[in-house]
Length: 376
Image (tube, rainbow, N blue to C red):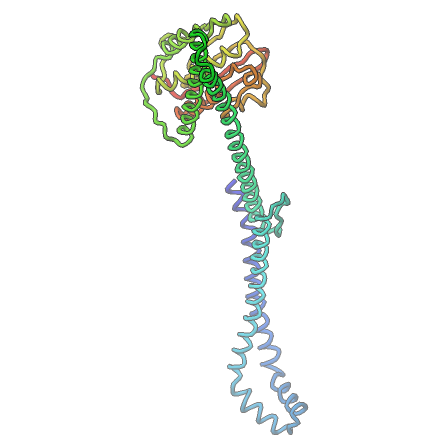
């Protein structure tokens, strides 16, 4: 690529060099021609003829005038002629260079224009044309990214308002009932208090997750890296989620080396794997097994979470890790979380220098987590 750029710039450099050298050579030729054809031969006769016919001098007066004023100062006149010739050639050179500057100026104006038309320059200025078009493309991409960021911000506010309003409305509703009916039976009072408290806890969880993802985005999270027993961590998480899995008859099967370890923040990795398992529990087919497998691939540790469930469209696989992104059925049934779990998981894995991906097909969904370098 660098060799190509040099070759393209050499075309421009060669043309500019030829223009300058050609002007210098042409100037020398013109000066030499003036000296040989006019000054050395008939220049004096021409001046005398002009004085006689234009100034109405006699031939003798014209000859003496020529001798006194021209012939004795011929070196001065010759230097003036050289100066004028070279000045004209320099003007020609600078005029050509100013044309290039004018093209570049027009290219910059086109760069700032809000259109998709490509910038066109002279053939010898192809490298400048390519760079200006590359900058224009970059500016257009940045503008689109800015617009997308604004749209995501608006969506974030909309989703946050929606998700906060739902539990908040329930809390206000049940507390209002308690205030309006102070004499309701203790069982109903306890039920309404419990529901209001559950909704309040959900609201607290949502706000905590929202502030947490904000901290990850502003890089205010630090990792406490240490060797993590991956097998023990996943076994512990599976045990903790047994009640949640049992509600639909699901279970977790581990397929991995019991001595597999990874270096990272155990608490935050547990958060990642817990979010993935909870997601699998929410969307797995009833009475199916969630398979967790892990191993080393090219020095990295790769963990796969596979469950049977409805296929996820390709366009939604990457969006699953965006803030507040949830499948439609989760929002309608009320079984979904805040939509921040997988976004937080992605941020944690990114801080570890790893990647997280989702794949779907043949009625299965697989989450892949790849972490750099296992503990030897």
